[in-house]
Length: 321
Image 1 (cartoon, helix red, strand yellow):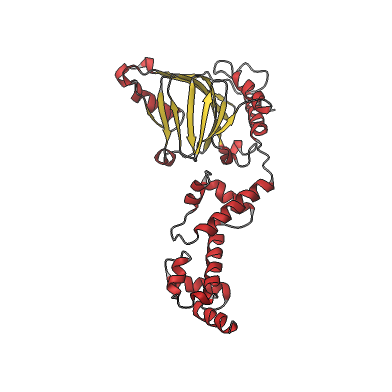
Image 2 (image 1 turned 45 degrees about the horizontal axis):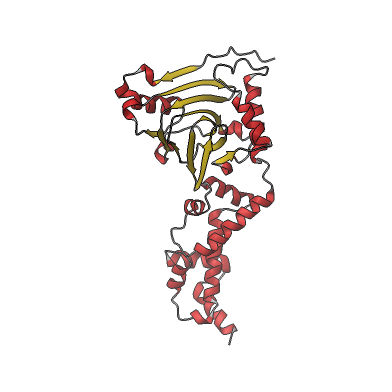
């Protein structure tokens, strides 16, 4: 049997420990170092107060956060400094906040919870003093319960059913009582993760994945003429993360680039075989299909259709006379 580890006492940081003139900078440094790399500002700099309490709960970390009104942002620069992907399950206990992530907006009130993708940028606006519990969960561990957690960014957990059970369970979690549960911290963390999976439907079936793939393919057909079309721009259009986009294509046993090139070449084939466009230079056909380099287009076209673009056009026109 694995030996029981001695429970570690909670760690605490408070702006009360420093001069008021340094309160905000102390808070930013503390949060970034101990919780998550973030950018924080407040309109009440002259009397800003905040407190962070933290304790481990098996593989997860419980963070109890109390702060005056503040604006919180997780930026691309913050992400670049983060080496371990994490996700957050945040339950608001006092106040209300507005969360924006990946094109979605969620208003959170006391007693409600929200799932946040810590691997993508987000913004939190707290117009008044707030108190919250944030469970920080490492990605590898969380994926045992949610295979694709990035799909549920900014997902609000409220109402009845499993969400109510999850919120009830979270409401019993406090930094000073995590060592007094009847179960081990690891087991408690797993119970919460299981409730989270039940609450947000971690069992996404193949039909929903196929629907997303079909939607993305429709977008590629519409935007294939854009030379600089990127996975990020398509993901942003649909309010999903780039990783969700990649997963949707992988589930269909293909890739974004493979499908984009295929659609572009098939569109070029249609144009070259249409007598109405017989006077259109091949270079213009390439440009209309998203190929910046006519030579590259000609090589790819010949690889796919075993004919150079001009030869294909000539054969297609002859066959129609």
